Length: 146
Image 1 (cartoon, rainbow, N blue to C red):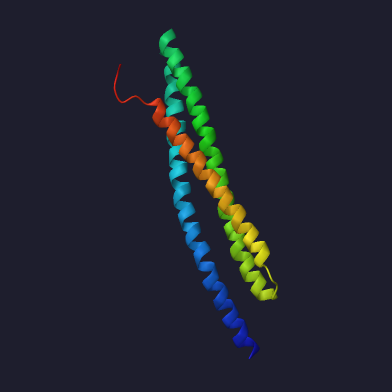
Image 2: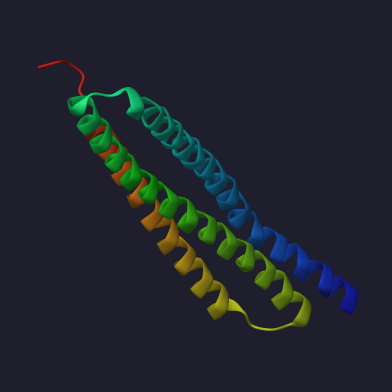
């Protein structure tokens, strides 16, 4: 009878762990978008640095301004990636804690709730930073010439 209880207990934990696993899939997609964005920022920075030696004074000022904006955008994106990755790690700890709690017959509800709330805070801040980076990039772009 004890084996049946353990199997049903583990199956319950698997059911509880499904939602965090789907959350991890969503976070991984978000991380891919953020990483691609960071790569584009770095590529643009390299392109502008290559243009510096041939630039006149006016062009040099524009390049310097854009490189400064790229630095800020890269910082926002880097922080967003760091926080989203931290969230994913916390969600992994939620899953591990659920299984360890079931295997060791320990009440981990408070710990799991704490990890989940902190993870969601990290993800929320990451998304706000990512939105800030997008807003900064679009505000610097002009769709028409004056």
